[in-house]
Image 1 (cartoon, rainbow, N blue to C red):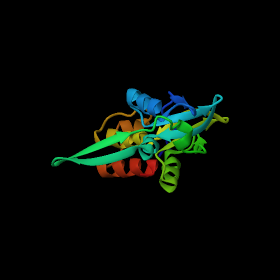
Image 2: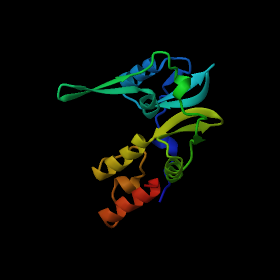
Image 3: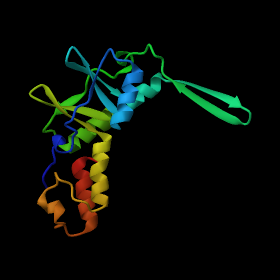
Length: 172
């Protein structure tokens, strides 16, 4: 069975932010773009990744009792910069890395994204959401554009075998 490559499902539209931007600006950008990862740049060079988890760790959370209700107040310090909480160094793999290897690295490193490179240049980002999309499409019998004709045409002998082969190929 064909091994699918990381770049076939990765996001190629790389959304970046300056390391000197505030976390408030970063959070607004993430909400606006509906994404969970930003590539952090300093002098046009990628130096790290800011995830929604990094932002949440930087939040001050205050829970107060207000009559019988709990009020949760989350705030970001306006002085916090992206560089203060970003993850670094960037973890990356070659763009032609098989998906099974991508999953292995993400599980081992306990990370939710990997940068993909081609000749030392960033060309994509692959996230757990991208990997889950493969599973969702397969469960719903939807065609995924990167899947080969064999999977699309369901030439496997049983549906169970098809699911197992796709899951094993992606490393899930």
